[in-house]
Length: 301
Ligand SMILES: *[C@@H]1O[C@H](CO)[C@@H](O)[C@H](O)[C@H]1NC(C)=O
Ligand SMILES: *[C@@H]1O[C@H](CO)[C@@H](O)[C@H](O)[C@H]1NC(C)=O
Ligand SMILES: *[C@@H]1O[C@H](CO)[C@@H](O)[C@H](O)[C@H]1NC(C)=O
Ligand SMILES: [Ca+2]
Image 1 (cartoon, rainbow, N blue to C red):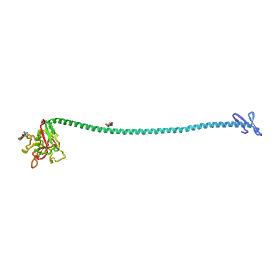
Image 2: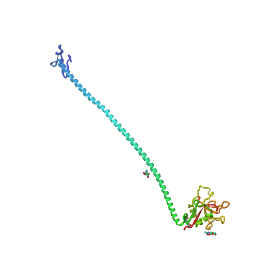
Image 3: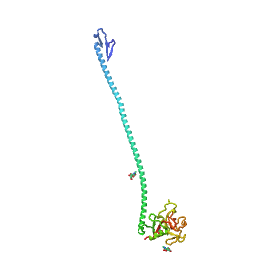
């Protein structure tokens, strides 16, 4: 400040004048002469003001900068919060996706179980349908048998069976000792009947259907006393078969293939019946002394 040069500040010119006496020196300002200390004081005051202004400006600037920096710091914080929020949403989305997946799997399992149940139900209902049909058939058969029994009840004696126009008694091995042909016939006569006489094909078929069938696992069938004695014999004249009612067999009869063969030393003169392959071939000739089951026939009441 202390200079010999002119100063120009705020349009004011300073014309310092250097003197020899320190504080008593003066400076020319315009047309006035001012003491140096006053000028210095004014200058320092101005400087102070400038510094203050600068400080204020810097302060404002710094404030704004710090404000800006804080807003700039705000952004990451907001972002972090946003990111955290998004992460939460994502994890929730993943969770609900998993739950949906589990629910779907559960649904699939339930669906499969239902399908299985439906198939089982169908199988069961098919089985039930089959059983129902079987039962219906059984019911019809039983009802027919019941009406037959009702019919035969009054017309045939207990233990006898009505088949069409005759009552029959099958003497079975289970409840009777086996008998020779003559003893069998005597038993039938004792019951007011005689050995069965097969008069026609209808009677033949009816007996085939109603008498027990031969257990086919037992072969050969002639190796044991099988079949039942019936009322036919050729004991009077070999080869001439006569029924117990004195009617001679005319139409050839329903002999098993190869029968009658009068087999053996004693021959075979008595007729028996055994239900094997076909109703058309059930008779064979046997030794009259062999013991067998027998079949009686009598007219119903
Ligand atoms: C299967 O049958 C049971 C019992 O009858 C029934 O409760 C069930 O609903 C049936 N299921 C289907 C899939 O039809
Ligand atoms: C029942 O007997 C009669 C008289 O013997 C006969 O005409 C008819 O064909 C027989 N019916 C059956 C099904 O055996
Ligand atoms: C069959 O003939 C015998 C002897 O000739 C006789 O005793 C019997 O009474 C006759 N039977 C029938 C049912 O006619
Ligand atoms: Ca008969």
